Image 1 (spheres, rainbow, N blue to C red):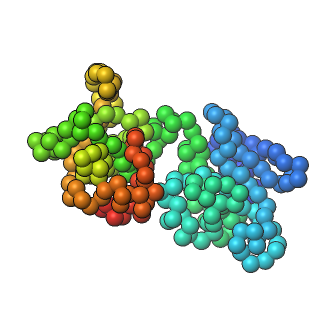
Image 2 (spheres, rainbow, N blue to C red):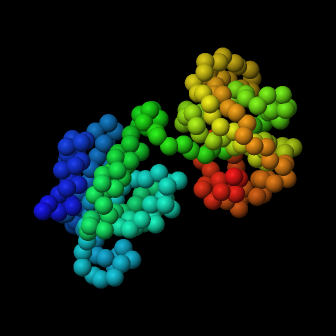
Image 3 (cartoon, rainbow, N blue to C red):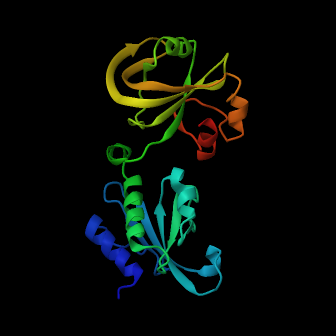
Length: 247
């Protein structure tokens, strides 16, 4: 029976035409797999002592490091055979034990996800099959979003290149509110729209629909700082812990 290391090699070679690269003289069995599109790594196989992974024993085990969606990180780490990333960012990578504890069908899915996440951004958007929660700023000096939502449930909003239909957008309204006031869902993106003045320029917009309005004193900037959000100058992803509170 083929070892899991060999099964991973064969899967990546057959599906992505990527061959292992051995880059370190000191670690001759460490193998890197790169994107052909941009030369980024999407997988690294290592042989590591178990105790260095937080496991019992000093014998070595093969692991596969793959990039993952940070929003799914907590869920992945609850699964058998998946550990915090060894020698890579623990916020966006995981280590998979290649000892049989993780089902090979799951390993293949994680390889595919890592490959997709390391594609160039335009390609990622074309294949993204999950939705993201964003927080975006609104300045009442330039656009009265509060007044607009009193008149309409659906409005046009400046397009962010990373947002797709189905994403959730939380709107943070600057002074005098300095708080998240609205939760919206994105209905359409890339709508042509020509607008320009000394403060704002727009060439495309997205259509968003109001789902929920919050009390102005609830999700203030001081509250957001507790979740690591100290400034909001453009669209940014919302931590899962905060999404659970915003509802």
